[in-house]
Image 1 (cartoon, one colour):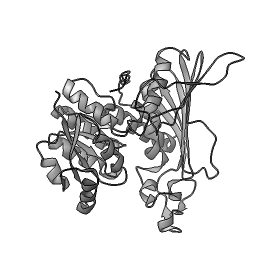
Image 2 (image 1 turned 90 degrees about the vertical axis):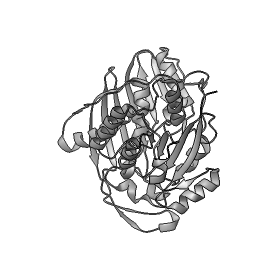
Image 3 (image 1 turned 180 degrees about the vertical axis):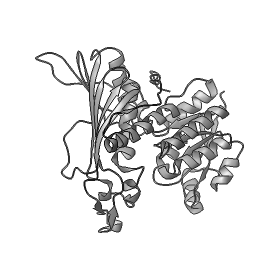
Image 4 (image 1 turned 30 degrees about the vertical axis):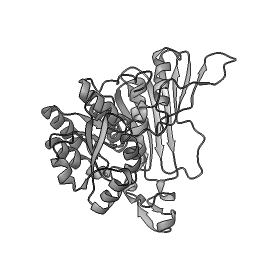
Length: 364
């Protein structure tokens, strides 16, 4: 019998609930502790999900039995917690992005390499049935050679529903940093690493008004671009368009992701979800869109799947899929879009990554 991998969660905000629910159900994982700067919040989560210990961050990092630290803090704290966990000899899995700036991202990967530890980075939606089925269709040649792609995240902004949306308009956030990782991780899973990017970015509305109930009418100063139109060139050849926006007040009918190949078009599901639908349309005058059955598992909300994959890899010595190199490539591309816009140029990617292995069928 394989020994369970004990993990501890740092950050007990809203997103921690689904991680605690899912990770507690995985046979290979055991959530041994939760920590938060607000100890009462940690205690409440521990009680709700039956976690044996709620403690300070320092106490969690010093626990010799914990092998993986799951970092669910706000983006501004990602680097600090990741580095502290690695210094304590722990593997770390962090919510996206890997860090706010590229320098911290490099420091995390360098420290992990020096200590022979693993870094995992969300999103792990790319390991779900929808994206993995899409990948299999590409790998099996159904649309021929991929030549182009489009992706759109068109939103009116989180102030409509989020109780505390300010952080999403600060430096290191905005629609590209908040939602771009889902789309970029999907692109890398489907098409491989990125060669260069360019973009135009703007702050369309310098001030936003909260319309969610608790703080209705309060104002937010916008500090980061809220509409970014980007272009990506992939090492394998395809050219893609990616638009992320918090400025689309009237909604949109654009698809989430489409991949265009020499033999047909693939409609990829929302990369912020794990399921379908996956649709394909082959070349021909009488061609119609056809929905493709999902052949991989994990189509429900399976956040934490990347942690399970990393835990399995720790025990087997194999590579894990939602890894730090992909997380850094995503982080570099996020910054690359903003740099390209402000400096009127293409940004050439300095780092690279491997296209991760496909998920098994049936899924573990």
